[in-house]
Image (tube, rainbow, N blue to C red; front, top):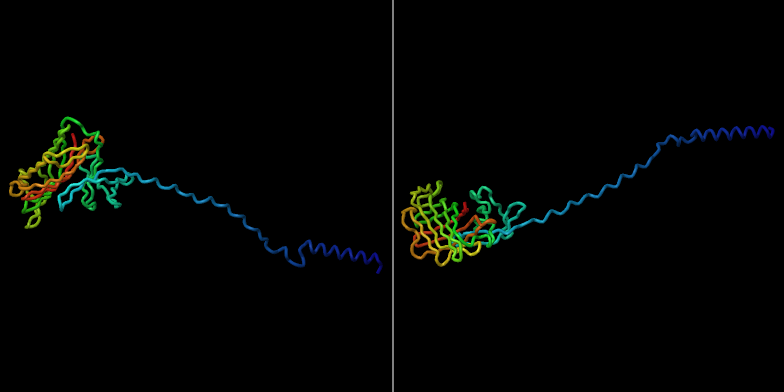
Length: 275
């Protein structure tokens, strides 16, 4: 074999190997699947943090209560939440029942019985809003519990409050016109109270001090026409009254009274407005 033949054969073999490698022959690696790395997921936005809730807003209102056991009336400062309309009493909340708002009252409401001895809640007036002279008549209604010594009555009555403003400011109240639906609780059970039309309660000589009023040394009371018809407040009479003027114009009142005598006792809750 000549050198030229050897050289030609070597060139052909080399060309064959290059062609085989270029075409993927001999190993099959070119048919393996191509692995592509997945794209990086986008960085999520941080979870938004909600703003803190607004601080709850309270306004101070006056609770007007009566202890049914001792017949003692009292006032106390309470917190009214403007957010949900609840009253906070010693860190416990009670709802004001809208159905208990006395007709015509805008600044006085009744609390549910769960609120204990607190019966009324009022947005008390400022002392400067209470008139310093003249007279006024406040007309409203009362819830009255009467015990005449032999029976007890749970009644509604009209309440008319006459006020003399001035340096010797005083207040008188007349309760009359028993409403329907009252109940009489006696030794024979519970029956509807049959009003005679003669039922009359008077409370005179209440003292006014700024935007509040209460019993004083000249306060007196009388209750007639219930049950047997005679006077039930005889002998030593104990009187406890607490009330407030309510609203920006001091044109509403709310109060409680506990009165006892030798022949019976009264528990009264009343409101009124200046027409």
